[in-house]
Image (tube, rainbow, N blue to C red; front, side, top):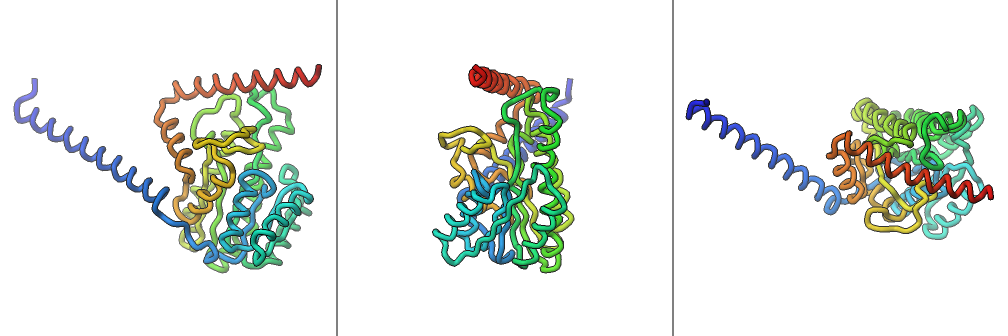
Length: 314
């Protein structure tokens, strides 16, 4: 049994520890409230005159390109299909007549030296690339066991999500280092933060992007180049296959306004506050709970997808 003086000391230690925990939580909440609701976005033209957006013809990438144009940057749109690129370029110039737009068709699932040289030439032509958004990516068609993926699926997931980011980043960095300014945004996913059975490779490649960003941010901070990883949850898009927007599942335009407003701040961030809340809740759950929950959800999605495939065969 503890002596009275020892018991009193233990109570003081517990109280102090509790106050420190409460103070930490309080400061975290205040900081989050400020960053999501009070803090304004940076003047992005200070990084340079041009922004490059990959995967720029649909969903988040297209919306990010439009938002960057609204902020006064000239835009290089890169995606696979030239006709879609032309449509987005036309839409941007119709809204923002003073903005210059260039397009380049690149298939990131099969990058060749010819494609890389074409990107390198565009970067040289525009000169002052201040912002790069590595948005292009690919997920599964539907949740699958890893052994069911084709070899092409496995390669494409790596090429679209990892190699595209590595190649584009390496192409723009020399100019940014020379000018001593720049901002790079790498797009990850909420799936990188939790166990994702039946989407294992997708969550893994997105986790790779997070770790890559954390390392690069440390490398280039002294050179005035800000490198950030953004982690969205679900957004209405072709990738998510969700059509109807809600508070938790915004449309690309709503998400992209938050995305662009966070450029130049935190290194690892979920820029849309309901997504940040979801990620915080998921990360608060122990692995032995979250993994079976995710598996159950993905098994349901898998079952519906397989049923649709069978119906198409009939």
